[in-house]
Image (tube, rainbow, N blue to C red; front, side, top):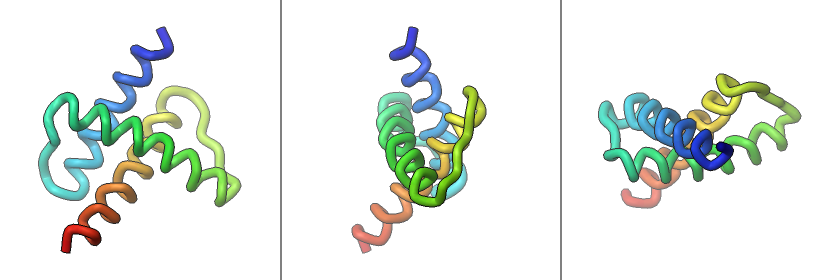
Amino acid sequence: MGIIMWLIVGGIAGWLAGQILKGGGFGLIGNIIIGIIGGVVGGWLFGLLGLSAGGVIGEIITAVVGAVVLLYVIGLIRK
């Protein structure tokens, strides 16, 4: 059941990050990948700041923050 939750949270987080930065998603697989990597980045950033978010909503928030940071950095590198 854990892997299914990772995919669901990753898809939601990737889609939300796409809405925040570019105004659109990246397709189902792209959203899931961005969301999962964003979850790792967000968890690392929250750990550095001493923050913690619990529950599914907290996981989604953490993943969205990480995905937004990830997409921002990728955008900077592409320019």
